[in-house]
Length: 109
Length: 117
Image (cartoon, rainbow over the protein chains, first blue to last red):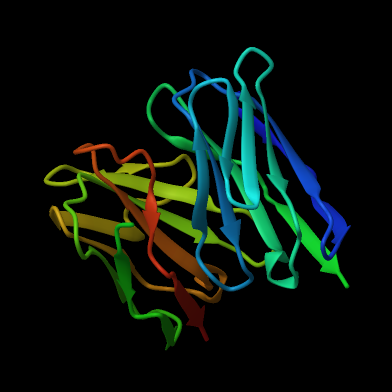
């Protein structure tokens, strides 16, 4: 079966750095996405990785290792507004998005 | 980025009635639209995938006769929840993608919160 694993909840301090991991087993791979979702709102796109390596965009970085079925999202200089759920999703060989359950990130002052 | 709208943003209805939710891609042609359902504190659950002009593909466990999907044009898809019941109360989110250009992501609508009394 297809499976995406990510931690259920993480806590970090304002101004610090947090790394949210995602491991996946899917039938085929056509890219990995990270989305942010605030409570009661639809997800918003954060990053897309299809090749191995690190993609950096401002305070946010996303890493992919296809051989290990592993990705992480790195958030730097955390702000209170970063408190949200972070969803990892993998596009499989049928171009369907397989979703993780999300990681709820709690930022403390 | 591309914009996807949903209407209504929230709806309250009586048990047994039908509710239609519209999903529109405002500035691009969506060859594929996706309908998701999300219960509180749970992840997105894909209900169905629809391609313009063809029948929707439903995920296992989703009743196609209860959740009617129409994708009549490249900018509009509708989801009709027929004979809604309280257990259908949920957050329904659509997303759209286009095979044209360099788009590699799904663009999400703002969601529709359905409450069935």
